[in-house]
Image 1: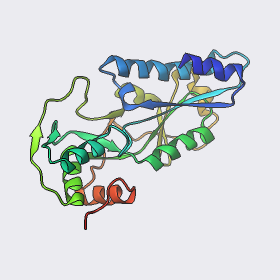
Image 2: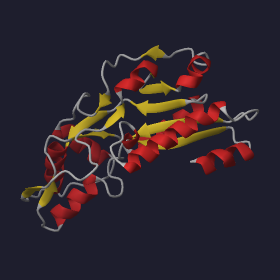
Image 3: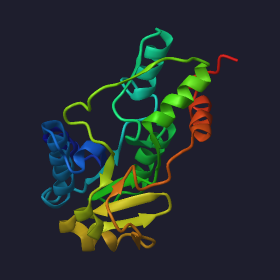
Length: 230
């Protein structure tokens, strides 16, 4: 992160958008702590860069639906090979974000970012058990389910905004925007349509609309992540 910051300043880059993750919010392991440190470094770069004019912003989201090593490819491989489908807890939830949504978020941050913001999309979520049923329906398969322990460092629900960040969180259209404390007043003056967030508690995947199996099936097929066997 520091190398990217210094390279951007040396080369007079106008805007830098760093990709963060839900693990930076309330980190419970070293990886999450390094992601949080990265977020803080990019925000801090806005007010120690001296005469440089680079705007540093961050986008934060969870696993992209269907991406490499995510749950859809894993479940699909187990189902297609006839193995038991392993699931940690059927009520575990995850935010739903597609590749197109993630790309649109990054482009929005590049276009709208003034520096010091963390951009977070307003998302729906799903339960692992519902996703499992959706995949089985699409593939027209039936397999046994095996419950396994939660992995070390794995959260029961994803969080993208913690309770301490709420006081600096605002909303615009389909986004939440967290402003850096040290550049808060300067940054907010550059926006003319930010409003205070309506969130009363941390923004986590168990506190938003949870998708039904039918809606998940529609998303999975529309995104081309799986095709029906019919």
